Image 1 (cartoon, rainbow, N blue to C red):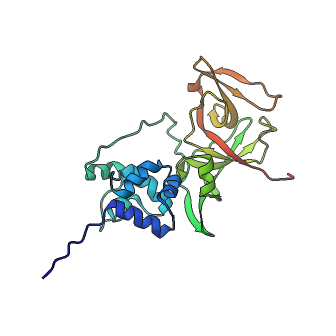
Image 2 (image 1 turned 180 degrees about the vertical axis):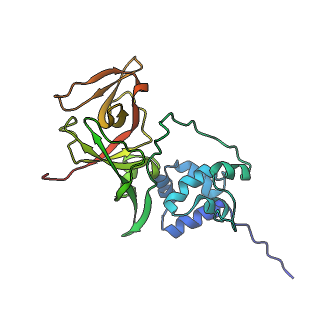
Image 3 (image 1 turned 120 degrees about the vertical axis):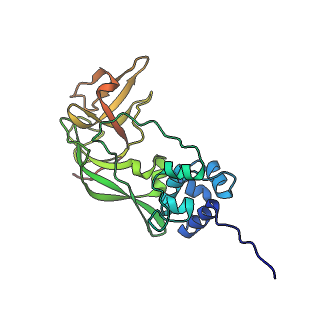
Length: 263
């Protein structure tokens, strides 16, 4: 009698299978959708590098599955596996647990709501949350705890041309006031990348929170100093120079705007 040894299903096997079932034609495309370096992804799918818990979480989102299913082949449930965090998964796999430093943000700030992924017309679309919060030229409302009023669909392939941020770090808010005209006008919607919360050497437009609430302003780092200048593009409003970065909270960078024509 002959016995045939059947190879166990590995995370590399599941990664390839789920990618093909999702209709994603190449590892390079999935790597781009997940914001993972292509060379690293190739090592995961070939089995040359063990899939980590955190990488599984990033790759599972565009595949439309849970990271537990990708990593273990089972869902987290009383009848499946009792692993609910990447740290628990890393410990179960004997992997080193790496914890990223936690940014100092107010305890009320919880970040954006996770995006929903759908497939339509052969394309993958991310339904990004639109918050019931207004970014104002004057005292603004707060984004914290605000309900998501609706969602806007962005083609995921297009999103990857403007940012590599995970989809759960993107959200849309509205602009109010005239301090950023002509760049931004009242009623404009702006896409915020919450991961870009550290202004660099070049100025950019950011959603910030100060004592006046939530605002969208141009933020410029003063070279050679640990200070920033908050700028309104409308010359009728004076710039606010020499601000200690600790006195404001940078929520994220504006990477796209939508505007109604003829309004």
